[in-house]
Amino acid sequence: MNSYIVYVKADSSGRITAINSDAFLEESVIGWTKIDEGTGDRFHHAQGNYLPLPLMTEQGAYRYKLVKGKPTERSAEELAADIAVLQPAPNDSDRIAALEAAMLTLMEVPPSV
Image 1: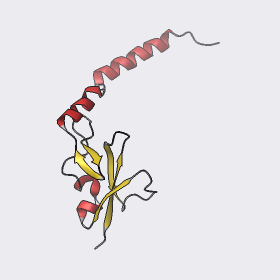
Image 2 (image 1 turned 180 degrees about the horizontal axis):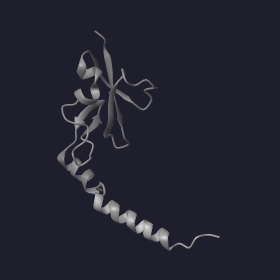
Image 3 (image 1 turned 90 degrees about the horizontal axis):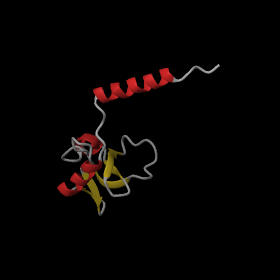
Image 4 (image 1 turned 90 degrees about the vertical axis):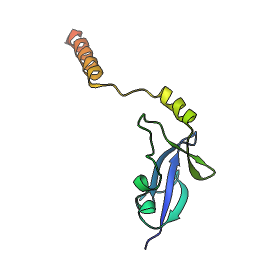
């Protein structure tokens, strides 16, 4: 049975932004941190099997941070601080209104001669 290395990528604050195994990292592992090694699906398919919860919360905040080379679940306070500054994705109504406003603006511009 093959042994696989699990790597994570962390941002400048230590939040884990990606996880994968060496089976799928065909490029250099520069910028990735080795966190574990082993056999089986947990290590081979680390994206969906290694961590007990999804990498991100439903609100889009990164759930884990790297502490002394190990993934650690972030506190409720840390998550709340991230969620407070996240911009919500525009809904369909907002997107349509923005498109309509842009179209009206374009229609007002006189054609160039």
